[in-house]
Image 1 (cartoon, rainbow, N blue to C red):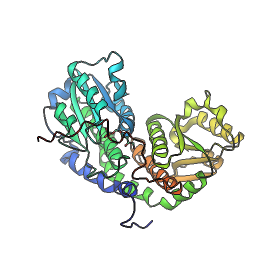
Image 2 (cartoon, helix red, strand yellow):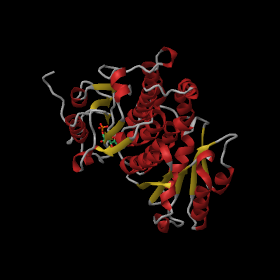
Image 3 (tube, protein in one colour):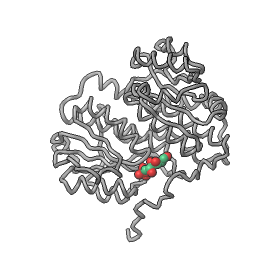
Length: 374
Ligand code: F6R
């Protein structure tokens, strides 16, 4: 699709993602694949001493944190809890001076995220802010901070900051593994392969016309379920959030494995399903669910890898197939979210929503305002 000056910022920001991801990699990946960190005191000794990770954020930033949990647990072998910042003060928060508390926020100003970070800090946690805007209340409050390099953001619906957050959190997990002496040779190869992510995102962006057709088809319905599992499940939540927010369309993200425990009862010819699944992780239960969805007459759209590793059983059941390029499993979330962001944009346009100002946020009222005295 051709870019024009008159296009909404929302789509411009979606299309900026390859550049943003490439800049992020340049900033954080040093020589010999050493992962650089901004501001100390998150030095080696601090990182080595950590025995659990607590990630907190709101909305889209929370979804980036949810995906990061999988990589933190596997690579850095640290128990990782992720929770919406608005819940942090509503239970007994079990963090201490061996906890790395990471607050993720595009703006650095969401008041719930700031409160959650301060709560963790008061309990002694080592605090780290991951923001796109500095100085901001979160960077002032945290003991260290990392930046996403999304550049200036003109629309409140986060897209480029989201993929950048996902990437930086992934790099942080690698960095913790490095500091804790857990780095494995195949992971170094993965770090090298990270360089291909911007190109893979560009590949998916080039398929925008296909997503536009999907949006046209979806416009004939009133709701959609987006299903995924593992580290891709937060992408289903995020895709559904974008559809609700930007297209004013009822969408629910749901775990593929949980869907057969009740929600399946809602499925029929008027309830299209978008299934994100890959041959190497789908398994027989996903196939059984897909068969059941088809038996109930649901339109089934599959987002999955194309090429030699294409899931033939699932794709033969699907009414439409959106092809993703082959990337390592840990990199899939950043690529799989792109068609859903584009879908929200095209459906929003078809439904005549002002996609730059869709009105689903508290209009920044819950933001901590910048301190003008700086
Ligand atoms: C949705 C969206 C919001 C924000 C949330 C947190 O598209 O952008 O859900 O992610 O309000 O904002 P930040 O990241 O600035 O703390």
